[in-house]
Image (cartoon, rainbow, N blue to C red; front, side, top):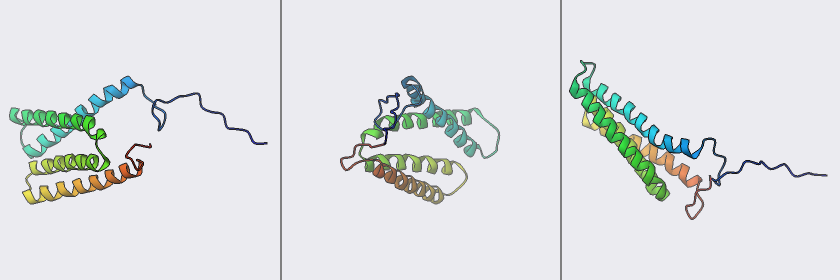
Length: 146
């Protein structure tokens, strides 16, 4: 005789699975992750710009302003992009990633063509990856089925 498998007593608010962290942790991470990524990005851009030379006040200011711009744009994308259709969502993240990498490469002593080509290549790769992911995780009406 077959028996039904016991059900888990853990309920989920999300239709796709169980949340490991609380809502408060997710809210804190939504702010902390872009700030930390922005600080790393700002340091990286400032290091590329000074090319191993001495650290100056202008270099620190450039790094902080770059970090601020990156973090603000990243937070804006995290709040706006999930409301878009999968094509627009993937294009937005691809453009952001390509522009970010192109800007980092342009801060080093390279040509404009190289930074543009690398930025476009990264943007195309991110777009293709995210479009495939969103396409395979949505139904025909565009609702997420994770």
